[in-house]
Image 1 (tube, rainbow, N blue to C red):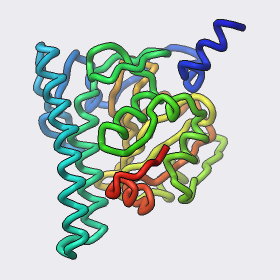
Image 2 (image 1 turned 120 degrees about the vertical axis):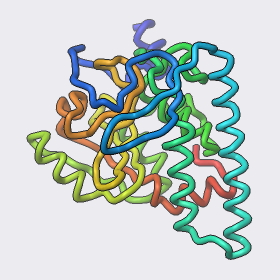
Image 3 (image 1 turned 90 degrees about the vertical axis):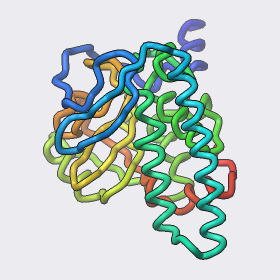
Image 4 (image 1 turned 180 degrees about the vertical axis):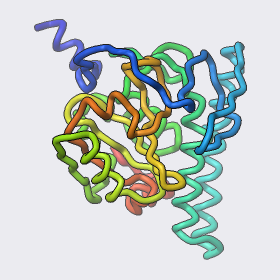
Length: 259
């Protein structure tokens, strides 16, 4: 009982893999250490620059966090002056998170209790991957509190009161079809019943799962949702819009608390 209480406190119970198995990973998933995303072709492969200097990785990531903060201030001022629209903010926020913050984490090992704050230094659990990257994008939240929640409660907190779409189907094919119909271009939070969390990205009409994967390659990766072994293990999902969540993005602009 003491051990279980300790695990609960550290947020380890929100992703319990029922069985570790080999998974066929989409070519975009990084399986080598220390990747930093250089460019992405969503119809092909991902090109990576591989660095062996952990200090340079940490410095690059720190710079990306600074850039996110500066972007927030520029967008807030642009919105005040009327030189940009809120749609511009949605696009810029999404691109910064997806293309500048998250890629540093590709290849970072998954661990049931991992909660590192630095990409490729230590390990990261699925819940901490979400809470850490959102925090480092500049959203004011307690990454420990968010990561320790169940997938549904995480969805509720990230939603900021917006709609949470619940998908329940008896086959992966039907679940995929419903998720595809519910989503448009942009980034989402996806909770897998009571067992796992990640980002869902729709870009150029295709759905991708970005998560700290407890199956092969047992690290943070991106893979097509349709081919994901993790996705195929579940029948119940919770979807929350991030890119088009006006309340969440306004709180980000105002540096207001989400959690």
